[in-house]
Length: 324
Image (cartoon, rainbow, N blue to C red):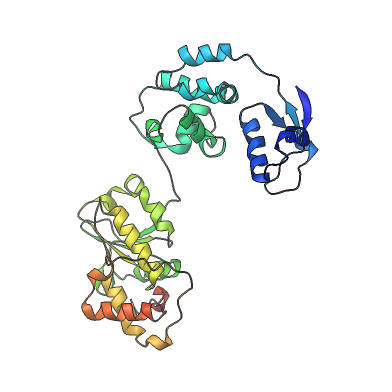
């Protein structure tokens, strides 16, 4: 190895734009020809480039090429690495670990979590997310499906009134309403607006989308029973409706999720004067479909559209434990 400066490396690039200069240096780093010297500092620009580098001597990659062609698992394609041997030299350990995993663990029919699969292959549970596992898989000509993993989200919070089926499962957008309804049931009640409820689920706003991706894997058996009915209750604004519609669309292969109509009707009855309603937040996505409105009577639908078009909204917190 020998030292070289950023200025030396850019001698033939002085007339280029900084974006082109940056791309040139990053290409040299990625190919393994140079290695930054962190202690030398950077040039202070955005994005920054190191001021000093180690220039790495050219390597003889003939042995690596033979290894690629004859020693890896047949599941791994060598096409990319044969053309980019310096990259293979850099990623070789991880590729070898994956090759060995395929040779000794051929049964990938049972899905496991992403971090579990990452640890099984590379002995680092966060390797996929933090250390380039996704890039290496691409270089090996493999799709993510080949590793047969599932991603995990924060466990969803729910309160079970009872575990009988058939039951109605109510998904709540906001935390205050979830806690108030739970207190309502803890006090011995069994219905909300006259509707018997078996389970309350806290959706946590837009987080409900990621939470319910793993619902089929993490929910208790009674919740998965196809005889159960699922309903959703959130804010009456564009964002709240969009949260519901996206959830309903992504979940439709398992079951139908409907708006909890009695709760929205109660909101409209309690907060009838549009002029006194709070103004909706700026920047909301207005691209909702007609899925939500299709469950309501014409009069309710017209009132809700009027509220939205007036730039107003009704938060679900307008209803409290005394209303349920």
